[in-house]
Amino acid sequence: DAGVIQSPRHEVTEMGQEVTLRCKPISGHNSLFWYRQTMMRGLELLIYFNNNVPIDDSGMPEDRFSAKMPNASFSTLKIQPSEPRDSAVYFCASSLESGLPGIQYFGAGTRLSVL
Amino acid sequence: DQQVKQNSPSLSVQEGRISILNCDYTNSMFDYFLWYKKYPAEGPTFLISISSIKDKNEDGRFTVFLNKSAKHLSLHIVPSQPGDSAVYFCAATHTGGFKTIFGAGTRLFVKA
Image (tube, rainbow over all chains, first blue to last red; front, top):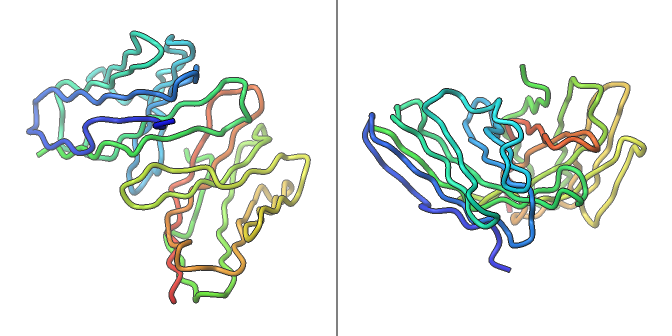
């Protein structure tokens, strides 16, 4: 099993540009999470999908952020327009809804730098 | 409002000694607690968990202790090894919910 795959691993962009982060969850997992890691706040949940449906997006910071899950094997997180304060590491994680509570499998992350 | 707090950003321990990482939580609804370990340039990986019906769970060199009355949990690593050097995240959730709340992490350095 390849695990959760995220791309790109690193993204450097200029303020105002659109950024799209991609995630392929583990096959068979029906829950998908997007997190943002910062020094001050640790891992913040941005959005949660269950069976491809967004269930909770209360963590999405602003309307500039949007996420989609068009099918069970792909999700995107888009930032438009990007700002320097969006610089962080973004993680995607997947899990089985029927699994032990709280156990999620994380991708390696995308390090985003907005100049 | 941080529901899961790890007040020590870093900890340094000598190889062979015990490492103790601490975590506090505020939400009484949490009934399942986890520790994740993260190496540089990798995502967090699950390490060990504990249900609120227990006060201790052990897995090899790793033991998690839960004090519900104090809303406090700790991770003990004995003996500590250089390969344990990583960031450790405390996390909490409640059974039947989907949200897992993570702390800010503690960076552990184990010196050889």
